[in-house]
Picture: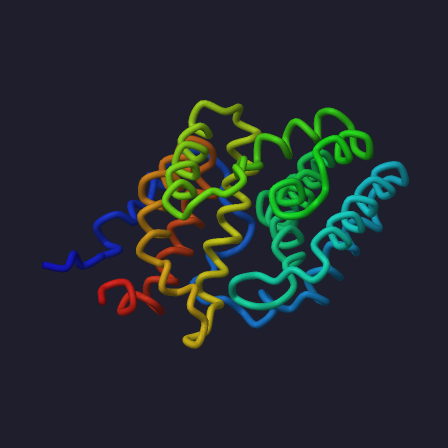
Length: 241
């Protein structure tokens, strides 16, 4: 008998009476066209960078340029330039969580460099300092050479489990990264094979991402559930096949 996935069984919304501040804009029940619009997303980030204090502006622009160069030629599963993911992640912190911590924003722009490009952690450290390198390192999953798909899934599970004992700032940054990834599920099109991974992705959400967000920030926990619910409304039939 094939197990049928029902989002109502595990999309448990945290108690709204909590005093944790909610995100600054409504939940994204439907992914707007602008979500995949790289020029627009980059423009929003650059506009924010341009009004920062000169020393911060230099560092933030350098991080954006380094990330753009390192991810050049890479694409997301849903299509489009990979750089849009770190840019959107930074904008979640700025626009929705109303946080302007420079080190956090730089970290989100660089968080996939060591894992997915030829950039080394030492290069990040030399350019942006030890604290940013520490945060990037904690958001990087080691990928042993010759790792099989089965080993990948096991290692990913261990990596995700480790976040529960991590510092709150690391958990926060990981949840922001995951939120943008989850929102991108609803931006996939039927001819893209990635939607076939939804069963595994939703299993990871239930086991790791929701509890991690509940422990870290109610605003992010609510948004993560909303993103999964939106994706399920589009791709639930594919999951239940």
